[in-house]
Image 1 (cartoon, rainbow, N blue to C red):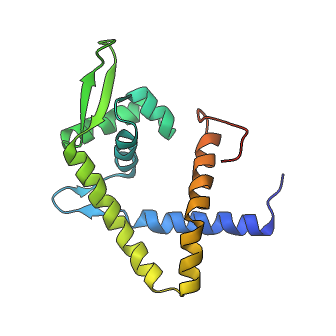
Image 2 (cartoon, rainbow, N blue to C red):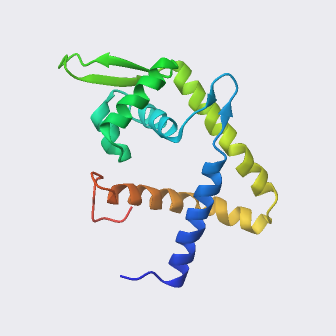
Length: 158
């Protein structure tokens, strides 16, 4: 199935927008820059507390050794804790700390600020269109995640 010109244009705009936002990766005072892997991992731990390293790796499409290394760094910074599973002592569960939650919130806010500024600089019509598209873009994101290897592939539209 080939893309229509509008679908291709949307894909290009989303890719460029994603890269522009990504390049603005915040450096937090007192913490320094946090690598992308650690940022997405911290968010995943917050979204799915009590996950195993393997579950985190699968959810993010990362290699397990890379996730283990990033978890060690996040734990060293006090953003996550590792706990032994009460059901199986061989399994380690990862949970966010309050510091990790507050750091994630501060990072999200620092990423949101340039977007807020950019939205203020475009027409009210474009701003309204972007705000109305938020739900549809979230559905697109969810569907893309479901199509990833290991994702929950449902045939139903999201």
